Image 1 (cartoon, helix red, strand yellow):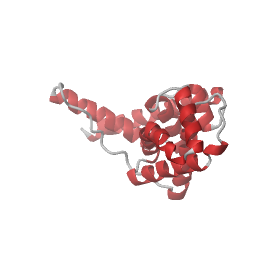
Image 2 (cartoon, helix red, strand yellow; image 1 turned 90 degrees about the horizontal axis):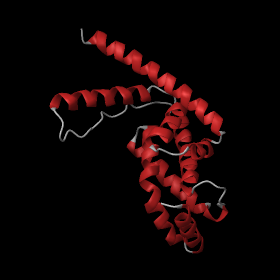
Image 3 (tube, one colour; image 1 turned 90 degrees about the vertical axis):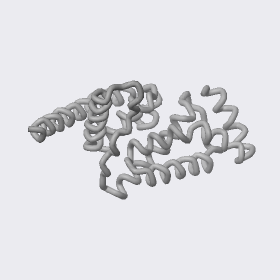
Image 4 (cartoon, rainbow, N blue to C red; image 1 turned 180 degrees about the vertical axis):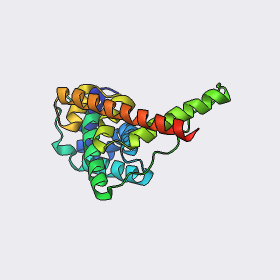
Length: 186
C-alpha cells in the first residue's frame, strides 16, 4: 500500500463515489481492528468503522495531502469516533480470552502462552482509553510515530511521552495482576 496508490484512488473517488470502495477494501480491516482494540466490543467497533468510512466519503472532497498517509486520516476519524463512543458508554467490557493458535506447540506451552495473553489483555482493559489508544497504534497497528502524532493530534515528543507513561502503567497493572494470581493459586 503506497501513498501514490491512495492518491490515485482518492482522485478517482472524488469523481465517482463508487470508486471509494477500493479505498474501503484496502483499509477496512485495520480500522475495524483498531476500533475493536479500543472499544473491546464487536458491535461498537463495527459502528465506529461504518461511521469512519461514511465520514471519510462525505469529506473526501475536502481531504488534502499533508505529508501523512490516507490511513492516518482514517485512524484519526476512527479515534475520534471511538472516544465519542467511550464517553457515551462510560464502561469497559473485559477483553475476550485470547484465542491463540496451538498448532505445533505442546499443551503446556499453549496454556502458558494463552495465560500470558489473557493477563496482557486484562491489564490493557484496565488502562484508560487514551493509554490503550497510543499502545494500540504503536504496537498492534505498528504505525510510525508521525502518523500516531497526526491521529492523536499531538507532537512526536508527546507521543513518546504518552507511550512511556502508558507502558509504565501497563507494567504496573501486569505486576499487580500477576501478584494477585500468585496469591489466588495458593
